[in-house]
Image 1 (cartoon, rainbow, N blue to C red):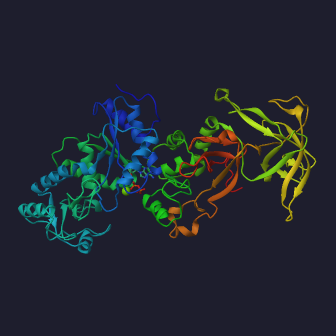
Image 2 (spheres, rainbow, N blue to C red; image 1 turned 180 degrees about the vertical axis):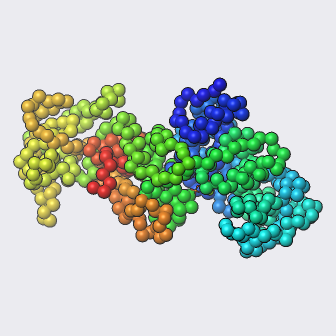
Image 3 (cartoon, rainbow, N blue to C red; image 1 turned 30 degrees about the horizontal axis):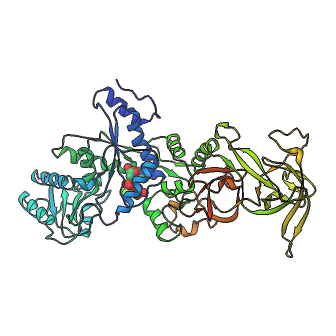
Length: 553
Ligand code: ATP
Ligand code: MG
């Protein structure tokens, strides 16, 4: 008896456990079947983790990657490459070669012929409008097409000539002969082939007839030996058709389709079509804009793959429709980075501090831990000199006791360094502070300085003589409303502050950091260098997530 050892339990895994126990299957085969008409998003991550997760956890189980490429008009080879990269980055590897539904066009055609020969499919010449009219409605049955009972030989001849390119687009189609009175509209003689004189990214100009999704998907599953074909709930009423096709052709394998609820996430669009519109309308910089809920956008923003996998584990797999809080995705990111991101210091809105009693020509190399709780991450060297930067928000000329930062005439501790005291400020003509002159106490250095001082505030800083200038991109959610999918004009609910750019400095140890590597900039948040725009000459850091959830404060 095979029982899964690891991984989350859910109703699909229960079905699989049962199928293994009863001997219905010896091994399990799943597939992830994206249509290459856009980039993968967080919703797809749920499906990827489910399908590939099953393959990882069950003995000898496999998961295929199959491009569901039956619509040559909307699809593109660039999307194919991006999807492969995203699945790999998420940490999964498909079994064997990549599959394409278009690999099966010849077999699909042969199965269509089988259906015609059994009088279970016919060539129909109703136009689009007539077809709609004949289909009926949810409350009234449809009418039989006048072509429904044409002789088998005639349909065979016409279908062959459809393939040969003899007929115009829209003039003919192949339909399954099922039941025009079925309560399930999908069973009212669904179209299974249509004419399209379109170039296909895999098959070129070889075909001018293309099979429809419902005919293609079940047969592709069967040809690949898929045991459990997992899809989202909107396919529930396609299932009778899925089963009908497989029951009426000579394929041996009969996969089982099981539906689960799709991931909906607050403040987030999870539809490739709508995400594509954001890109086309230039509302974001591209599919991998760090504000996009695409896998490539989240990656560029600094979300670790493991955090996305953890999120998918926590939300679970059920048949209940619900919307997940964005905060729970961010919490997974934060938890992961809290343990894994080394610490560093960056000043996002710098103002100069001059240490008046520190020797001007001197630079000291102070030692700071890379992580306060994880000594294995080692230490880094942080230069300290008579000129520093601190954040403008960390200084006030006057403040009450609640303000635990630097105040004129008072002391504050510099992170990993000394206690300083603000003595005077220099302002420009407009009254803006340009320099804060401070004194420092050389006795106050060390991890737990026994200087006996009651200095509550600790602020971060960057040495002004050795730093690297850096651009910081601070992201907030893209939409102001929880359910942007329900909004007709998306422009009206865009958050105009979803990207704020600031120019500041980072400590010199970050001069040759790797892109996409996460850091915690102390007191500021988690950041990583931008994979597209950051260069050695011009460092650009994306804020991955703030240190805590402060939305709405
Ligand atoms: P979109 O509406 O974004 O185009 P789709 O369902 O058409 O999504 P496909 O490329 O056909 O996209 O999806 C591949 C797989 O990912 C399918 O099995 C689909 O059910 C699943 N999937 C897509 N979106 C979600 C989601 N939000 N939650 C869970 N699974 C999803
Ligand atoms: Mg789709």
